[in-house]
Figure (tube, rainbow, N blue to C red):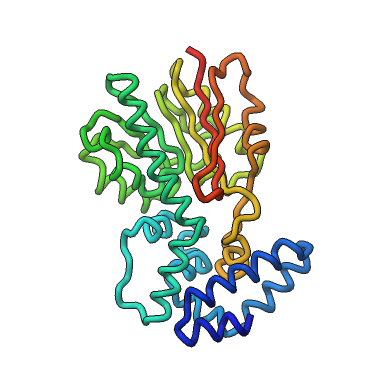
Length: 296
């Protein structure tokens, strides 16, 4: 740990951060849960943590101004929105490193995939298309979608965070995007109804959902699909490189799933209603995707 800190303080930030990520991933992998927690408690007393918390990306995850890590502002940092240029040199380079490791690159791929899926759905149907984004964040995939810019996809963006929805309303309302304030709990309880749609997706939500809630929500999302409609889900894979840094330095806790875990989320859906089921990973092997098409 001290060696990594020395590299960072000396301005060799990429070298120091790379060593730190590898050290923390290894510790997270080999230590039992309680021993890992004790290690993290000791780690956070190390002076390197104060330095790293000068990075607004790392600090926002740790401080959780909206009550949870991985909020829409953090995703904007990854996408290149709202970057602060006034940071000290080392903190800025830590920011640049942390937003361009494999996990953030996978998040950028995920955003591009969502935009391409919206466009492909509109092209396939060749008619006004209904799309629902569950836990939409700032809906930044809309900036990459030709169909959204042309007003050919009507998107209903659902999120529990009014601040995120206000950003969507401001930036994309003119493109036919509507917003709905609702939590997963409200959807599962039936207090928020999902209208019939041609595409429904959730990008980052499942990283925080226990299996029971994720399975129930998947069934509800699938039920909202019109015949031939598609449901796209994403979840971080176990044992990613950023895992130790995220938990140890950022206090960013996720629920990780492999491909089998993702297929298990279809447990409440009648298999006769599923036309196709595709699974694939991002190019950096950090996120697993599940695409399910409803029989028509």
